[in-house]
Amino acid sequence: MPQNALDREDFNTGEVTPGQWRLHANTLRPVTSLGSNNPNRTAIQIRQQFMKYFTEENPLLWQWEKLGLKRP
Image 1 (cartoon, rainbow, N blue to C red):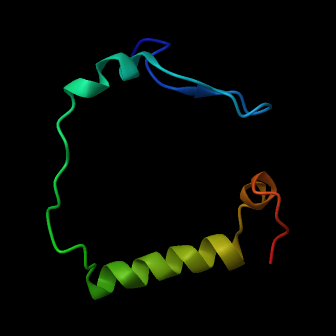
Image 2 (cartoon, one colour):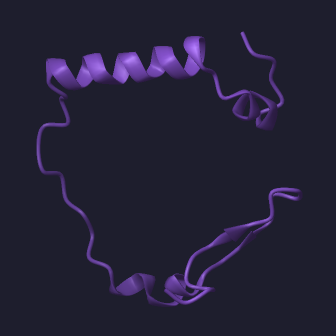
C-alpha cells in the first residue's frame, strides 16, 4: 500500500491529512441496507459485554481525556 494512501492524523494537533484514496472516492458504489437493522439477541448481548468492558472493567482513559471529560 502506498505511504500516502490513507488519511493520517497528527495526534498532537488533531490535524488530519487526507489520503490519496479520496481522489478516487467517487468510484465506490453506495452500500445498501442488507437487513432490517434489528440485531438478534446474541448480537445485543455481545455489544453489551463490550460496552461494560470498555466503560467499567478496562476503560480507555485516553478517550475520556480526548473528549475533555472525567471518567464517570
